[in-house]
Length: 80
Figure 1: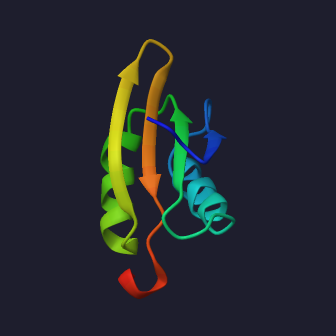
Figure 2: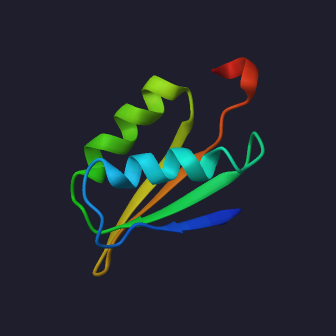
């Protein structure tokens, strides 16, 4: 999946990956995609819940040997 920005959260544990993703998304334009790299298994539950609460769109979670790649599309202002 193509992302407009990547955020490395390897080694960070809840709630830091979510907090860092929220901060990074503020730098992006509506509709852009953020890729979050994480090795905390909690991101599989935390990111979908956070996206639901904030109106951002969870595009997918890929699991691999290094951890997780999570893709989030920033919501348009009116969608929030």
